[in-house]
Image 1 (spheres, rainbow, N blue to C red):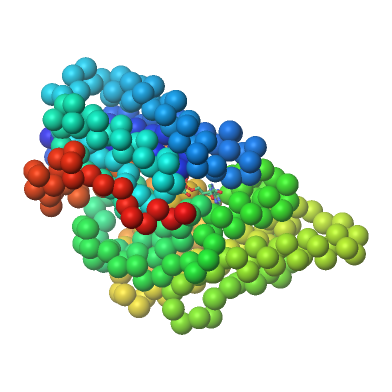
Image 2: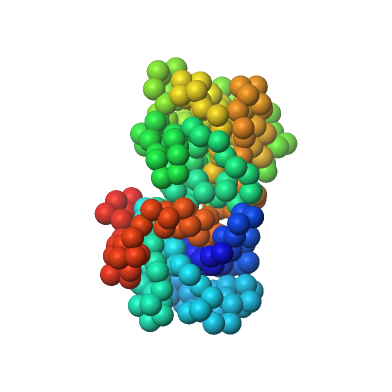
Length: 342
Ligand code: KG4
Ligand code: ZN
């Protein structure tokens, strides 16, 4: 039995979780997420230095709460491993979590491992307790990423498709900004879309016909911008709900088609969804239908594990640590990702 402390500070969530990795699977003993989203909303997006400042302010409180909720009284004897996000993400934000984790590991002589944030999202599906079959295709959709990752086994990944410009979550955020709906855009755009007409406006499905599995979302966002300009210039009244529904339909259509095509090409056994946009109801429903239709096992994270959290980082830490030597798990070995994505 192993108890793992997960730490995640790559963006605007200060998160820590204690995970029990026992014989009967994973048990999340605590999962604390302190979100800064309200503060960044004023700026219409995440401001890296402000995010770092808030992480510094919150991190010790989040740490105490995560241990308390998990019933950990003696850190040194009860925690076996620290798993911390090493990137990609915002540099100043990542540094706070990494330095906190390294200091803990140094002080208590604890094992520590750096985790790729996207690998963390992938492993959010392992919190369902299900044995996921390989090869598994992961559709990772968030504010920073839109990727199709083929997973042949634990730790064996191949990126088979990705966005060439904006991420799909970013497109939701930008469309929300164009419609004055605030930040983050995904939750509000998808809510409004529920009472809108998805066929009201014909919006492009970028790259839907391309033979590869790459995506492009900046054109779709621009198409919404021009549509709004046109409607306003002609003084045509419109419902924001219809714009949201038409946009969401176009954005998700491309995800579905590319994912199905990639799944068939690579003869997958399982399809897994993850990342912040995996909270989208329409995407969850339609992707699960595709999996059933093709005879693939299907997994999507519980809602609380869709957005950034540290439980998923702890699960990734469990699997990754199995392959590492004691020296590789020392506090001196943990480094920040070279690819910071900004
Ligand atoms: O994974 P995440 O918490 O942070 C990143 O690593 O980016 O994802 C946040 C993204 C934001 O762009 C947000 O608008 C989007 O996930 N999102 C959604 C929904 N809920 C959150 N997008 C579409 N529909 C939703 N229901
Ligand atoms: Zn994320």
